[in-house]
Image (cartoon, rainbow, N blue to C red; front, side, top):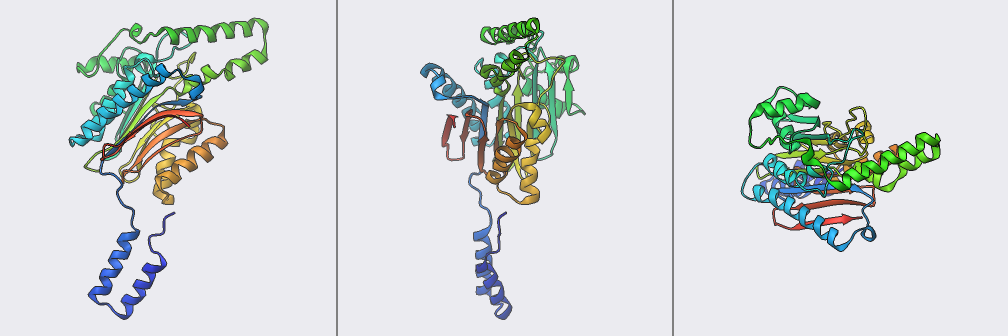
Length: 363
């Protein structure tokens, strides 16, 4: 917790009692101003492309270059909007759409497959000024779920739409930003083969009634990491407004209409102009239980923590102790950025009002 009245300020206050001169009053004002939190950036943006076992030794130079190029393209698109005076909401949507259109990430075109062999997508969007929010879960024919989540926020009386109803809402909009596609559009061969490997292991486990093999399926590094391919973005615009969004294909081999944290406001996404915006990526069940995104904002609001203190407390302490893995990108109302995770790596990038670009993947 920050203490805005230091001993120096107290000394000036005491001096004011005995000598309430203009000079002393100015000293007091200067001391208080020096202790107050300062804007680090008038506008800023931060993105993630998922967290997990992302290690340099497992990455080819060519693939590393592809991730760096796409993360750079994504964040620069949002940053350009902010630099020209555009809204945080427009910046978030633009940045996420680029990642949704790339097969590198587990969202949109690169989404993983469900147990039934289809691609089922989730997304959420939140406006920190009004605290309005929109989300979709289990959509199968909307090319860019993040744009549909925003439309739920702006063009409906609801917050969360799911399944066929969400796809029907998309079709009813007749909006060029909401492109309707066949589910085959989302197909990528490597994601499909990943599903086949999981299904084969499940079949062998069932035939042998082998509990140990069942555990190996759960512990397989690649399968575990498919939980973490979610993409997200948080932006602060020149008007002081924060927006956040998250989009994902969920988990490989997910069953029974499973929904993770990404479309859940407070778990996968949260934004509040008074505190911060957050987008999460990780093992969704734990992020839901911990209400990770909202918890960061709440710790800032009620415990007066800094953004860094709050993200560290929630990810490195609370989430880790709960048994969850993953990370967040977050941006506060003063332009401070945090990219916190408890996994070996997280695809991430940030830019501030000076145009300083940071792109990283590893711990």
